[in-house]
Image 1 (tube, helix red, strand yellow):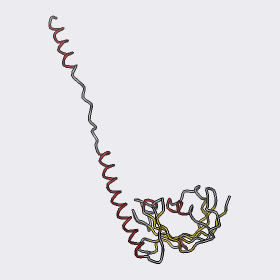
Image 2 (tube, rainbow, N blue to C red):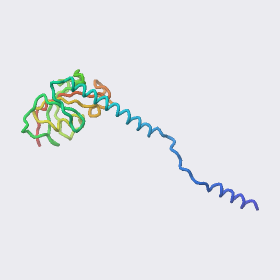
Image 3 (cartoon, rainbow, N blue to C red):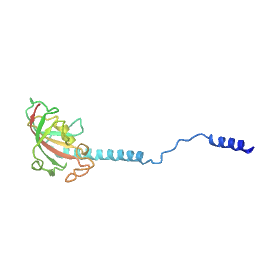
Image 4 (cartoon, rainbow, N blue to C red):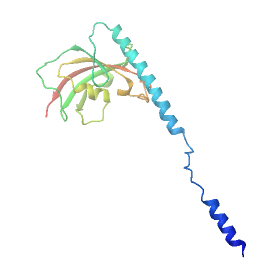
Length: 177
């Protein structure tokens, strides 16, 4: 019985050590993000170089960069007095998709005429951006990096993963609201 207070005091002193925070057991999430960011930077640089090479080869068109990260060149310009499309307008257009070497992936015939409600439909991000700056009658060639198109998935058919694209688009008309 006399030893009970001694054991109790010993127990208290051994339990009063400073607590150390636990270290995470799984560090892979942080590593994955770092590796993924490095891989994306390399991918972006490679695609940028491929687009610049495609521009240098195609001398007859005057490409200019957009603020959204793609390049465009007018093959024909429509009526510059026409208004640009805005949200809710219906844009009617035809387009074809090629790789940067101008090898046809999808023809205009395969894709048909598209009736696109501007900014209200789930559509290829690259074309959503491009249509907003066109007027009826414009024929434009876009060079899009993969992150604005089908990205790391491709389309599951003809467009590969991380494939930059050359898209020629003819804006036929716009039904303004």
